[in-house]
Length: 392
Image 1: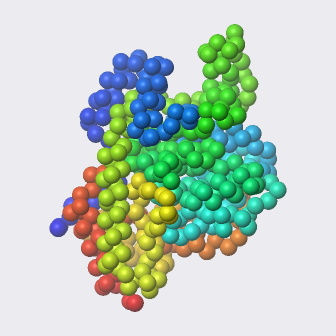
Image 2: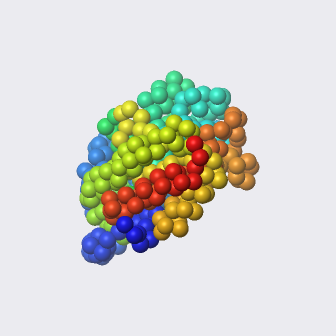
Image 3: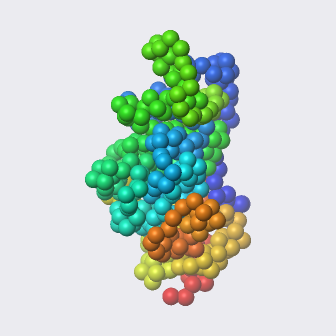
């Protein structure tokens, strides 16, 4: 096919959803407990989140991470282990309360941290471990959970990429002690541009702490439940509640989660199958690493990536795709190489896999409206580039 420009991403936003959300928000007088209750029920059903989980809807997944940091009541110098290959928000949330992000290397095929990458970093100051489930591919949560139980660490899932993905049948973000999901416009389902949710067990001892943090550090929720005759300032908190319009949009959009997830998985699997078949010699020759889904995990097709041999190979492929009207992008600059990472974080081991990802990873177009015809054009462009430009 002769392609028109194929964008890297198109947010899942439609006129139908926008009109539905506007009517819903307007009828709820911009905010009401009824709207929150309805949205939460709809979200639970469609995201398959069990009733024993408490949900706190925020303006962003970043805010959910910030609430985790406040709820843990971290002291200056406490250490939080996380991948270096992540968005700055993962580190910011903890560094701003005085904790030290300790950067872990990763497994290149899954792009996730593992017990092997974490163990050399553990110390007497370690308080929590933060996997990010890169691209909607789960980290090995069985091994990470066991490690945290043995060491007394808190497992915090940054599942910003993970809505609709699962591990051993459980939605990502619901397996750790705390978890969060993102509804940013780049994610599979959006809350009209931004939004997030913090998830923890209703019986978790920090639930009441999170309630207070969500309401400027006051015990307002306890007051509304009739547990006290007045409420007052108890701890540091903030204004984190998701807006009514974002709630109304998410309530409508999440009903399409299964449809969106099925299509994106199909696209992900087509990329994977065709590249495995058509680029086998380049894979075996070390020029490309394809993503890998671990046993027990199911991706949501959030990101499809290739890891090329080096920066020059990646840039050449990206340039060729752009020439053909295909938007493709690299991703994060590893945090341990950043100015703030050096100032606020620590790097204690070699970061060879992270360095390779920083130099070689390229993301291909992935969105609900991407057609198979367009995807075939992208695949053919990648394959032909390798066959004509890369020497085995």
